[in-house]
Image 1 (cartoon, rainbow, N blue to C red):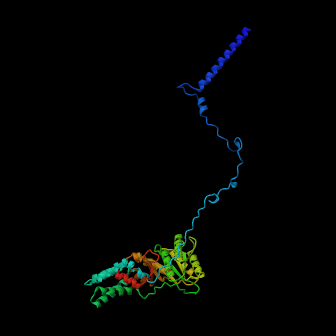
Image 2 (image 1 turned 135 degrees about the vertical axis):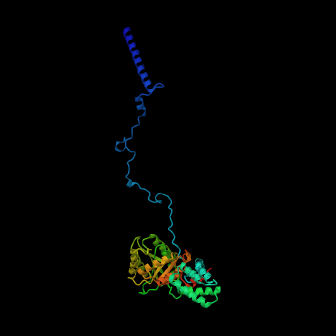
Image 3 (image 1 turned 60 degrees about the vertical axis):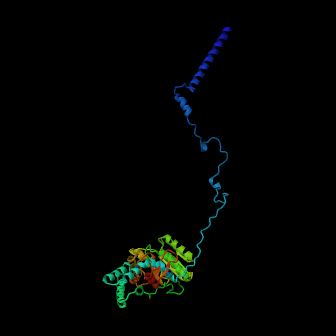
Length: 410
């Protein structure tokens, strides 16, 4: 019996010893001594990333609530539905209809502006004519002064000949006598008897408005001139419809429409790049339906050297004439281009029958002789001149006021 008890005790002690060795080994693996490198197995156990969560059908468990398709989700479409205060954006205000100043006498009122730029010609001629001895060299200088001012060769020779004759007969040459002499001869050269009325009366059926076609090259201020001309006509008590036949530039149609709104004139326009002749035709048609007095048609600016574009201009005129004659064809020229403007004028005159000239930027050049040269070249009068950027700075051309500005100055 004692032997059995002894065996059991020995077995228990042995089992306890073995358990202590196993626990000690595990602790050594979990906490390596200083200076030792951790075993690969322990490293892998410590740095392994957590398992990625499952999605969709592989996810464990069920969603808290069943999902809804996006079509059933009501998203706010306006600020009002979202609960936010609605801020109304006011529509842009229409420009107030203006009352243009009377067109009659505008050139007289703008004479100071004109004379500042034209004084070179008048003062130069008066200085030369005031010399004690008018020899050949002096007359050549007078001729050069006129040519430099773009008067043109033919008109210059005519003026010099008349001046020589009158100075010879006059004998004495006081400053006042010379000024009167020069004024009379320049006025004769400009042509005081030419018809400078912008014709807006119908030549054809009485139930059709007068039709004015505005043509010219790029950069002459043609669209602006058309808008200002509308103001001139409204100031004279006429109702106007504008035709934006410059379909190559959307900005041109927008610009013309803005000019029209300022004086209460309706603007007919077409799609960008559309047929200009079609727009011009529709403008005359709408002008007739509205019982307007005048239809102004702004055509696309074109280089006089481009044959295709010039042919298209002829087409615009022919299409408009299916409803009746065109009453006025105004050629817009930039006065600062001088003799180059004459080349343009010749080509336009071959395509459409020019009936009048509009000289823009006349206040920006000292070469006022272009008025004489272009009239002589085309045989048609200058009817309107532009003397500034203001909306009412387009003035009916008045020969007397123009020559006074040349000779008298400020």
